[in-house]
Image (cartoon, rainbow, N blue to C red; front, side):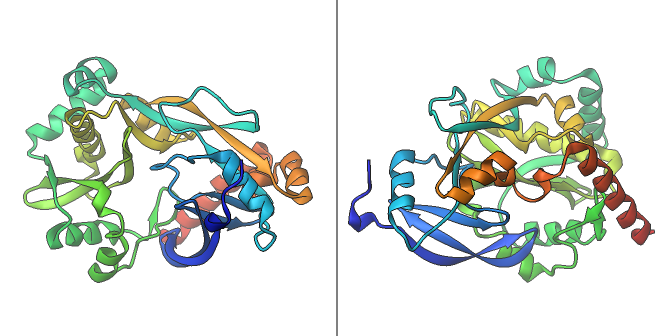
Length: 313
């Protein structure tokens, strides 16, 4: 079906963060929902807040994008959010791998969903005096965030997006979505040594931001933060905790030890132009880096990590 003329898409710019830096993107408003436009090998339209919203009527959105000649994206993409993972559309479909932790209760997670090593790390950190609690997005929390951000310019083998920011910048940039986030802080001797901004996605909790102090890495802070996030999800009736996407690296090993599982969410790609149809066949719909074969991508990532590590030394 087609949207009514009064629901014609409205094109407008929007300020956001890309890789931690202020940026302005083009967006469309269609039937009360905001869609972002990504330009690369193809121009792709997707729901801006897709972790938190569902596309209400994909057929109507597709018809609108095709009918209004002033907007010419090549591809429209959307996915099905957890727990609705059974494919139900006939469009071209691929899968996004996400890290999902089923939540029933904190006790069940601690006793049955994690290994003994992770359980021991949590208990050891608690005995050492690390305290993890829900808190608020206030001046103390922001100062703690800023201190952690400014510990090192490189994290996980790449420049850290938020290094070098002052308190006012951090406060402003991270306040945009606090209305839907639960703040969880980890504290040692009065100092915040880690935090999670746990997103409320309606159907699940989402680790939108999780980070801990490098100088306190011996205290298993991230394990404690995940433990508290599981407790918060259980108390609020969330059946899942989601740690964004799954990837074959050390972070995925951490996720696995914390009880996360790899699940496949159906993602659909609908070509809207001849260029989009061709690009879909060539794999251009997932961006420049995805077009490189895996045997090339991995060595490039390793080379990048080594280069940044050498610069840091």
